[in-house]
Image 1 (spheres, rainbow, N blue to C red):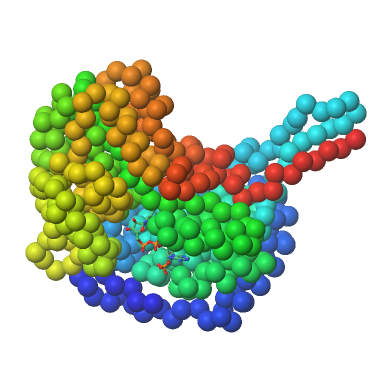
Image 2: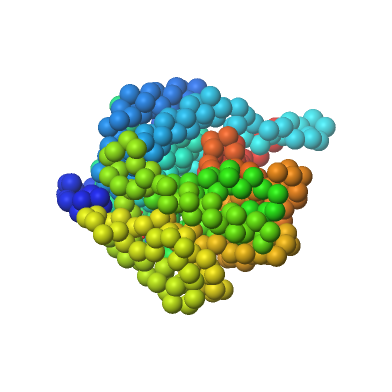
Length: 453
Ligand code: NDP
């Protein structure tokens, strides 16, 4: 497995993938570790998680630099990502036992009936490269603390991050086998998932990867959580604070080089404010600092690989061929590395890629609508359903519109973001199940009824 720096095209390191025997050893270790780990007091598991948060904070700069090298994330955003990982660890270190307290029920006379929450066993996590630390800690912090053990199959372009994350848990003092990285390619996932010792799987990534993992899990009757792509609407209504909306919208689209499932992708704009909003959006997009991701001032770095950039450009070209207008940007930058110009497309025809597919890069598509009902209709005119953002100074109107958008979350006057305290996940082809908060920690537990007379 080669780790290639997308800003320079240089090979950073080559990793030897795990052999079948290595994977077998890891599965045995996971299985044995679970026997002990599940019976430890939850307080002990919380304390270890707090120690993992300390390891993250102590080595923040090193982990951030690794992400920047392997997938091109601007260093300031990489540092924030490590801090957020420490936050999710702090969160579950503080709240896991409360979240997993047994729940009482109205009990028949003479009986005491409760739901208790018990871990399932080894959970396979198939994770993507876009937030190479955060996506992993989002699953590991709750699931390990609930008493499961973790097996990480990370994206093939971030092997250094995958190994560094395993090392975080080792340094924090986790017992051997509680969290392991498998350096395997996607073709090997089926065999691991079909193994009896693996009890469940979580995947964050593309639709095809999600369908493949869900199909194998289904054949083997294993629970899955899927967090797939999105094509989030960003709805600017008449009466929105346009300066704030445009500034936040440009950032919500271009953060992490636009490679985020919850990025604002389709800008749905009321006709009364269309010209004013779009002018501001283009100004904001053009003012972004694109460049060397190791530079603290860089806001937009390269795409994670030349192939991913080529796919993105193909979607843009097809949209332009179908009739979309390029307001700014529109192609790869004339420089070394996988740099794509922050782009705004208008007059986007129905059914072209910028309308109907996920654009996983710094390309905003703008749509003009006549009224509030048309805005809701356009926002919902997608098979995806991850997040949405609605902008209006009338908060009640915002609440009303937000309730009519089919998505796992809708934010009013705020960009869509994940937060350890609130559930995160989608509907439609954006996936199912929830991560984070109490909902997340309860995804991979046996909700066991305990009836005592
Ligand atoms: P993938 O979905 O292909 O990769 C995500 C993870 O799934 C990786 O670990 C990958 O392994 C693994 N994987 C891929 N195919 C399979 C399979 N058939 N069975 C089991 N595991 C599999 O994302 P890409 O990197 O190819 O990105 C393509 C597109 O996916 C993006 O343009 C974007 O639209 C979407 N995406 C969405 C993300 C999100 O946050 N929701 C994150 C990343 C991508 P390997 O790397 O070895 O192939």
